[in-house]
Length: 158
Image 1 (tube, rainbow, N blue to C red):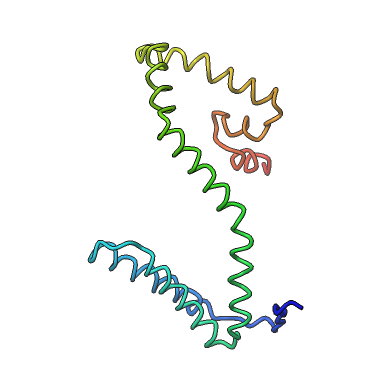
Image 2 (cartoon, rainbow, N blue to C red):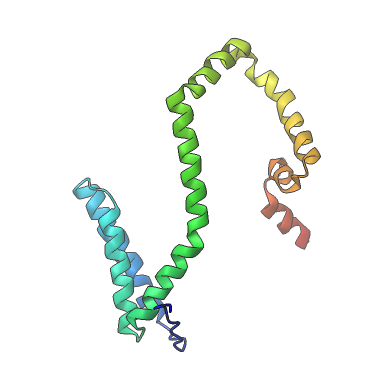
């Protein structure tokens, strides 16, 4: 007995300039809020989302389909948001527990700042080797001197 019903509406095309309107409204209100009033960007984001909903309703989308699109977007973004939250919690725990300060203190005791450049000559090739050993080929390609995987894909076309 789910109250969630799937609304299937035909694809309604929104003209390009009307599709850009919510973005311009959001950027304008955010600029005014941050520069003029030194406020947080939360209210301008909500104003931009409301503008997007109004534009969609203006061109024939029902509120139920807009709501389902919002839920679908949140559902797709939630795993990445959880990962970011977990990373933030880990960093906060490390900072609060003094782990970062301890690593910096003993790292500077172990490695003199004057040796950092010469030691990087050793550590960068070592990290490349470890990436290959661990099977992280894509990470290795990111470390290549001529750039990233995008550069390799560009070179592959030639």
